[in-house]
Length: 432
Image (cartoon, rainbow, N blue to C red):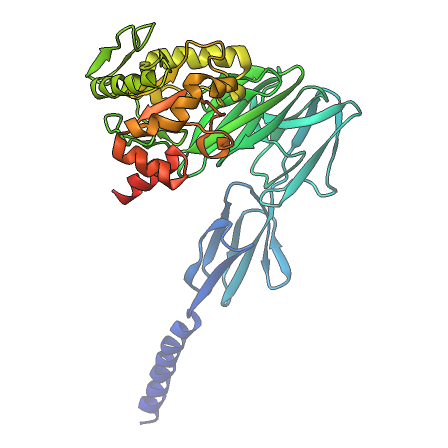
């Protein structure tokens, strides 16, 4: 019995050893973090057995450099791949720093630079300031021949090495810009002083042309205008509200600087006889009839009417306007001549009276024709389009010789209203 008891004790002891050993190989976690967070891919974390050999690695994202692995405050490795034997639950932190870049600046022209105290590092704001020397001005920052900033203090967040060039030009190399209407202008320069002006209209507006304010000439109608600038250029960028289309066939069509009849051409033009027009101008059929009646009434009063100008096509008006613009400058020409698509003459219902010593002059108002027309033309359906003192409304200076046929009823309404012709036509257009 004593022998059996000893054998049972021996067997029980072996079983105890077998049951205890698995407890020594418990599962433990290896947790991985990065500082700063989310700047690297961390590999190797997970669940392991005590005594396992574990390898972890850190793969930084572009712009970041590995520094070390730490456990708590202790540095445990200075290589991105770290191998160790696990003995307990472990938390490791992979530490990174922003990569330092090389940022250089060169001057084209006469100028220098002000650099910040901190070195350029990935993701950290950095700024260089260009400072022109006396007699020069800063124009822009260039990189690989492209403009990257028009501001002397160029602020950016580095994402790699950069080679910048600051462009400095003599003070007289500049563009003085005036903007008229709803829009803005972006100005850019190249190293050889080629400047490009880009016009950007606001919603509801359209670009209207570039005007050199010294020569008063319209130098381009395109939104982008480029030229070599070696002196001060005074430029006007013009924007206008998008033109409203008008029906040129309508007697009450609103024709002015805010509307357009496009390339409308009437289909019922007739040539006036010499007793009405020494130059035998053309008008629409019903206008010719009205002119005949009015001329007879004027002649009964001892006044002979003569139509000196009448219908003009889109192309004729184009040539005429640009001839005036070349002679007097576009801004002046616009005060007395309409652009194509905006002329009442293109309707075939507008006429200029003349044949006097005061044709196309304010003094026409004092001639027999001028006086009679002002007092009587409305009775036959003709209205003075551009009265004295109304240029802010009509867009054109006083023209006592220019009348437009709109029909007798509407002409009487115009006369009684005291409004300008374009105002009464606007009212009718809105009412319709």
